[in-house]
Image 1 (cartoon, rainbow, N blue to C red):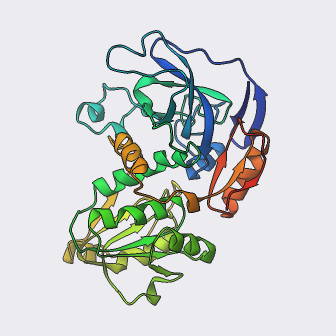
Image 2: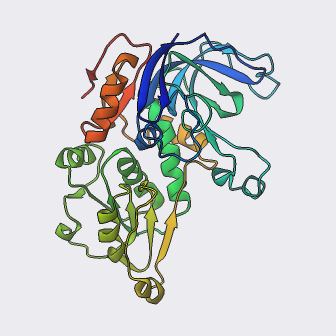
Length: 344
């Protein structure tokens, strides 16, 4: 069985590995698709805290069940060979102060498949704990459904934002996460959604998924202050541009992942005087099941968001394309014979 391995920071290999065998509460899945995201580049560069090398990357995954542990179907679960599934990559200890107070996404021993200490899905088959596996409808497109994991992160982002009918929302970044946050905004009560990106090609994708207000600069909008401003870029310039645009009493959300040493400047006096809330959001917290339901109910338009698919052989090319900001969502399809397929 073939797998992509991050052997050490900055070093990638394609290796043959033994076929996985499930533990008692594990499920073996043949990978259909796994998305590439910014976390993968941070892991590859050795910037993600806690990563244990070597590691197989890939945490935005869907596939088909090919083997079940003896204790998977325990009277509650009803998984079967051939089921289509999506996988929540986050595993937690259940023992630390955060797990015991319902904040498992902040777990002291948080582990993500393909991120920290467990292999991910950039291989022909991979193993996941039954608690992390979510059954999909047979008719659900497994390639498009690889967007469920980022959708679960976006739902977490909205969980900790105000839900006021009629708010005006500004989003920086028209990549995968910006597009998902923008598509969820009307469902959270937004009266208007504005998205800003210097990449005009990405703004065209925003139009395809239904975002009406699209600009390369926030200054070009008719609105000058927003109730909610969300940064999905992690770029300090975008953050510093966005914070002053929050209306008094409004909220700024750090959604994009900034470099660990990044420092942004803002006016503490204005945050005090205008009661500005600044919030962060990290990964998934009790949102994966809802993401499956919303995806299968048609809450987002996945097709325009996926542009390229690659085989395992071309993983390095896909990673480089991601770094350049070329295309939209890039996927690895380990069991697809096609290479560098342009989806749209």
